[in-house]
Image (cartoon, rainbow, N blue to C red; front, side, top):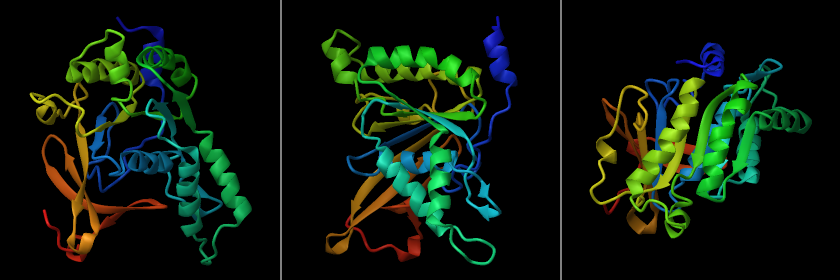
Length: 278
């Protein structure tokens, strides 16, 4: 039976984040869908998440200048404590400095500062140093989401952060079950309010017999993932490091190459890539 809060959440109109990234989601990111970002150490998982958050919280325009943001609110569950506001502000500042008026003029420093301050109001960060705090925080999100019609995305960085602490305290030792339990809990809240979910995890954080790579769904089912993005570092010739994103959804697999920049991610065309040794 649907509660009054669930009915309110279902009927509330929220900003669309479908166009959050044409590169990662060529068919758009839909409401209630779940995105997993995995990768090697230092491959840019948190950096990519920071870039996507920046796109969400920025305005679409400012005094006639196209900014390209989605004007949406974001809830970040910060378990790894790797997410840094300073890096987010750097990404926002760099993007805004690239914006131009119709006359070709750049935004003033005071305008940029004002836009950044307004954008950061759209971000709600909850530090969750252990699984208990994470679970309590997820349960308490309903009131926050219900009172803020701008929130369209819940992000978790990362799902693995408190696993070993939880095991030490007598929690489940099955990695996939641990991930599945947290994901289901998060989806129950997000589904009620038509929110999308993005979470990160290290590549190694799965069991040997894991079916995670096959557990892709076109529909927002509890415990299922709709998009998997795996980041890898490749060794190029002459010692250069090249990064590749493997993007999986239910009907396709894409490979994109990138490098990290102050603006977030810079996608590289295949014909400009240096030779690799892998």
